Length: 232
Image (tube, rainbow, N blue to C red; front, side):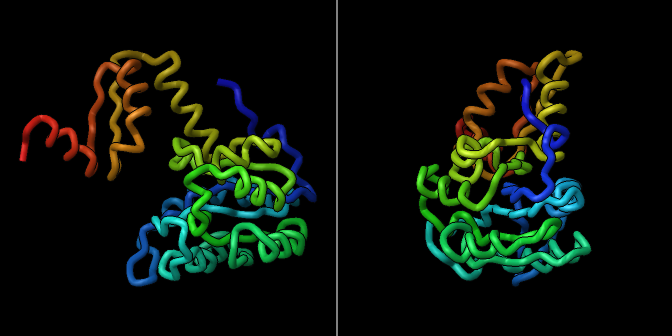
């Protein structure tokens, strides 16, 4: 499966909209697991070090199109800055005048974090207007949110149709691993899939079931399959 990577992008002086997955576990306002930030750092650093103006966007939790203070991405700002070892600016929205002004004010190598994309109902509906608002902020789009890539949302699929689109280093690694595992694998192949909800993974599971020898279902969604088999 051909896709463009950062190897073919000269980001210097360009505004780069970087779709991240910052849907981190938070308890009482504190991040309890930094794994997703740590895995994102190579892409942010590479872009910033090459002179890009990096604009991060992400969803967080399920505010269902409303502005919910407890679901703000602002707590991620300090965590990102500390992990990166450089300042991270914050915009109180992901589209509109405030986001546009914040993006325009960036200098080469600087990083901006936008507010939760799911504060807008159009995010999960893949609303063309929201996608256009996000695209207005940048010159190119880089998707490094593999864990959200199965959802056709405005910040994942919609904006990718409006800007030159590239895979970040995490996305690249995951896609290459998938190709190695499913494209021409050494058999037998076992796929282990976890997660809380099965509804968003039905297409994925159906696709996998045709390509692997054993499909193991874990996580909370295993309970759905157990219930379907008649277990209490």
